[in-house]
Amino acid sequence: MRNTLITLAVAGLTVMASSVLAADYPDKDLQGVIMWGAGGATDTVSRAVQPHAEAALGRDIIMANRSGGGGAISTKFVYAQKSDGYTLLFGAENPQLHKVLGLSTIDYDDFYPVNLLARGIAVIVAPTDAPWDSFKALVDDAQSRPGEIKMGSTGPGGLPHVVGSMLSSGVEFPVTAVPYDGEGPGLTAMLGGAVDFMPTGLSAAAEHIKAGRAKALAVVNLTELETLPGVPPITADFPEFEKFLPWGPFYGVFVKRDAPEDAKTKLTKAFKTAAENADFQQLMLDRGNVMMNISGAEADAFLQKWRAVTSWVMQDAGAAKKSPEEFGIERP
Image 1 (cartoon, one colour):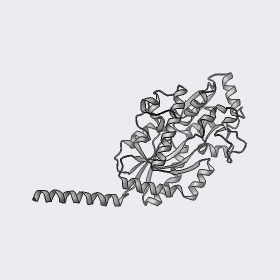
Image 2 (cartoon, rainbow, N blue to C red):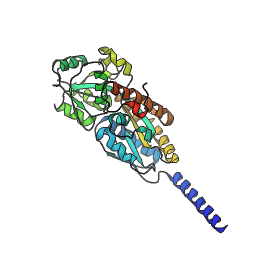
Image 3 (cartoon, rainbow, N blue to C red):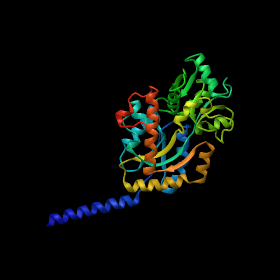
Image 4 (cartoon, rainbow, N blue to C red):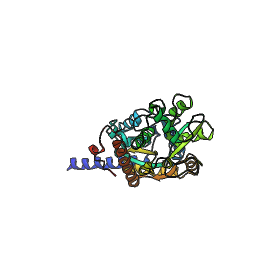
């Protein structure tokens, strides 16, 4: 009887301790791991929402860029940390392609979507002194001298890689891809003459376009954007793109799926508040992003649909190393 009472007492203390710990979350600063390099779209969005989330949480989020492997390095790093809710992944769409690209067996199925903040629009840019004034002119030039034109890329699973796969599924586009650790470094290389053009998120290229350092040849969208008047949608010359759209990069905050429920609840509330901040929303608008601000089941549904569409695009283009069928990803 005495042993039973002791056991019950210990169990009760354990439950009480867990409740106290949960109630105190967060009782220390958090770590934020940014999937791509400094200056890129993911970095820009992540650091813009950070201070508003910190205000809502009452704790600092110590941010660090950990790029490489098409986003696999940062994803694996966060997945290897404790499931305590103190390490956040500030990521983009890339992990949803890691399985079919053979980069990793980890994707967003293994993470809880704290908040999908915004969806970006892809744009194809070149230096202002480039000889092309339209994407069709670029394609025609590439076809006339195969392999000579260099495209800035972010490696397998990056936006340029996916857009290239979309294009190659219907149009001959023989360019040479040169990978960089993020859109920021890739754009810097383009402006320095190391590559000739680059598909990228508008959020990463917007300031270069506004400053006159780069020009947009097309937007990867069904319609023209108010923020880029006069720049045609890619479907104007290549209607075969319609079946893939709307499509684009997205930016979000994730924590391990098995993190404590209280931590996930508080993180979700904090980042929802952060995403509603007027300054953050204006920045997203200025950079051509569409606000999402969704989490939980709604975000999971979006992630699964995006993965299905994009994985099968890459499979059909011959760019996937493994079939989506191997992972139970059904054709949309």
